[in-house]
Image (tube, rainbow, N blue to C red; front, side):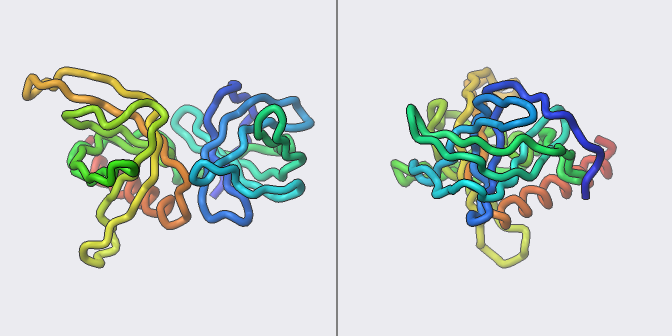
Length: 222
């Protein structure tokens, strides 16, 4: 359900999510520039380190965070460019709308241990999920999980009641912050991660998970 229109006033370098018509996942892209009312310039989305197959006139859906809300707009690819680096020109949006019921604000969790799967080493570690939004999360661990730009996956138990099934959320490290734990006096690491290449099932799961947490907090008077 849509709310009122929102002006396109993003800062160059902002992170957006692009969903192409022939792709069932949202891919992270960077805003490289724009000129109203002509076009918006974006980095070329990738899949497993390779540029996604895209062509001119292909429709795309763009989502992004602003404040405590999630916004989106429909567009189409005007031009694909590979020189001097891969990037896209998409049509400047006729309207940008906030998406009701899919708030992008971080929802505190602090009660869930997850399995983190390191892609290169193939190892699994137990980490705490501190908060989560539709586009990313904050993970807390006693060791540094990786450097900015590194990728790994998070495994979260499914809420569908089907036993041991787990949902896999690919993500990329955006920042690492070192702190002293207030209760144990030990050094801990906070990792801000951005979800990458989530399919519709994963997006629906996160939306439902956030909704459940909001209801729990309201019921507890939080």
